[in-house]
Image (cartoon, rainbow over the protein chains, first blue to last red):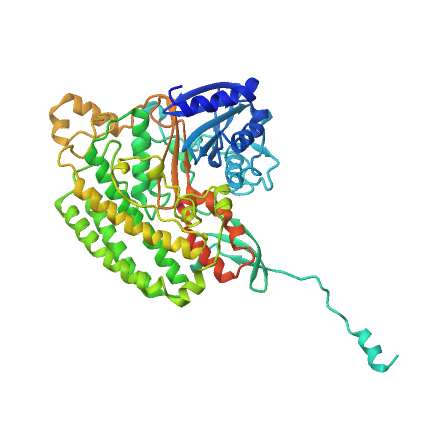
Length: 167
Length: 405
């Protein structure tokens, strides 16, 4: 860890949640910590309420899908401490069968629509969310379109020669 | 028991339970300035509850981006906040540049600052002028939109397009700005403050305007932070957060400017913050023109992403290879993930890019400020009048393209 703030936050996290921190790295200056899914609410609550870390702002919440790995779905949180201007990234990974994550709406009201969007596109269920329905896609859609098993183009099309361009 | 009393008992007393009426505001209504639907629960003219429906112009940009080479994603970003496309374009270029570690010449960075501040002015003109329209002052709108037209003429001169600009490339600009561009910028910078002052005189201390906007759709700083507000809307609530100052990008640290903040977080404050930001933008543009280095060219040395000049393509093998590589979309970028944000006209516009080393992003997520702060809208209009709800929406500057991505 090159950044002092990153080092401090990581130390604090390890001190309190030693077993739940799976890995940590620093990429392009931002601390990126992978934690266990069951503790995500407690960790974010700690990061928000602890006076030393004080991550008072939820910048972003989104999902990701790695179909080839065992824990294929993931949620990525970007938190921001306005007082020290410090950002960190938290990640959790889990399998599609177990896609239930604790909602953080009661910590950050802004998480409401971000979680709905993540549910809409990845089918990740947020436990305790007040209104977990689709937000951008239509209500009766059956799939979660940002998962990798749903290709962008209609696979029944015959007029495109993939052999030529390989994509 | 007298006759009168007996009769009184026969009178049917209406139920004390109130019956609310349901009102559909939108999706297509001239007053909503875009495709927004709100199902309102009304008690007379007081809004008791609101349920926004969004997604009417959802175009699956994040999915589209997963199949597009990096240079082809720029046109997608145009269509996020289409009132200030160049900021989105530059934000995207900065993200890729951060991942590939490109060294950008100072001159390009200053040109980008000029471009972004011009777009910020254009965006704020839309918002402030429309607040005027919704309070009944069409004059200011017509008057200030003429200035916006001049900004679009500058964009047109730079890149040929006006609204969805697709301006710049990864590494810099597609071509050198012509003398005419500089002349037009110069002219705009000289003329705009006068026009803005007249607009200001029309509204700022106008009794009717103040009565309509003060205390209309307020939000406290605490709630705004919890809801993830950024940009002018957060600053109007009293939090001095600005990405340009907090994490300077594109050499914003070289310029002197102040960040205006409000106190109440109501429509009037949002209006005033944007008004002051336009003045600050003009000041930044002036400084950038003054400090503009003469050396440095108009793009960085990133042959993988920057199209070589045509003469070289015909005469030089390497240039020809790069030309085809870019046109066929075969430029790859290193593995990694990066979050980069710029101060968009509406707030922190973030790009979360995950690259697996391929020719397209593995995952690209846009942190769209509109999407995040629009969820506070029901809370802000609750207990207010319907006409205030219209005004609150226009003062938040919700852009449908950015909301729905």
